[in-house]
Length: 365
Image (cartoon, rainbow, N blue to C red; front, side, top):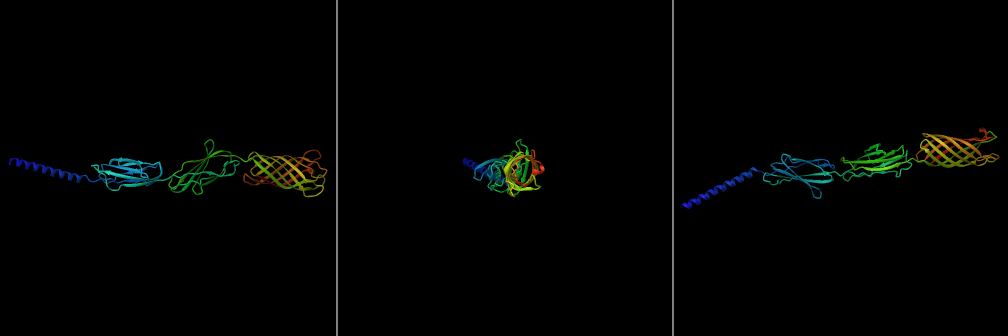
């Protein structure tokens, strides 16, 4: 009887203890709720290396939080554990594309949150610049238009909205710069001085991303040699009569710019067809001249020869003076009007009886 009471007492104590433990566990579970994950990522679109803010401060009942970042292929890029007292984090990306942020929160018992906790960020692809020029090599291009073309630049996920051109000389000093905001992103530039220049181009897309730098180095030189052709009316003074013998004259030769835009040397020769008959004869002329240039105006002089214009007249050695005006100048070709006076040199060669005149057009190309 005594043992029976003892067994009943032990069973009672065990039952009371079990009931107490079950109640404590139930109360404990009611007190520790499930964690709720909250994830905010800003901005939703950014450029390479721009800061991306991660904020999990809205998570509830969390002992800790964790965010994992995956690329478009599903590969884990990086992860970070955050605490309630420091729930924010900044990161960045050095590769373009779409990234998925997956967050989770753990409650006090280490149990994971069950609600969906994701965000996406798109990292903008930067544009690619392409630079081309209308002259390679740029020989004889001083004072001529050179086109720098950035129209071949591309952007895989947007469009080009701006092209920044800059030109530096051999010393690295900036010569000129240009910002173009409309297609076709070309710049027409004229160099007034010869030299070696580096052209730099950076393009910007519609989200503000910058391309890498494109560079193009050119050497700009002046055109110095020109082929010369001229033609016009040639007049030879009659040595006895008070009139002129008319000729249709044509010359060819070379012009070399000793000092560009300032001084040139001309060597030319040609023939003249007499427009009157006997005693006038067809002639040949030679010129060796120096010309000074002041903008479109040129003038100068030199030596010349003219064969006999009439029977019983000898070949004349002459002092030649000329002047003219450039009508068109494209740097590769020049069209001018000119006038010329040929003054005979020697005995029995009075100016009044033996001089010659010419008026015509001159072509350089």
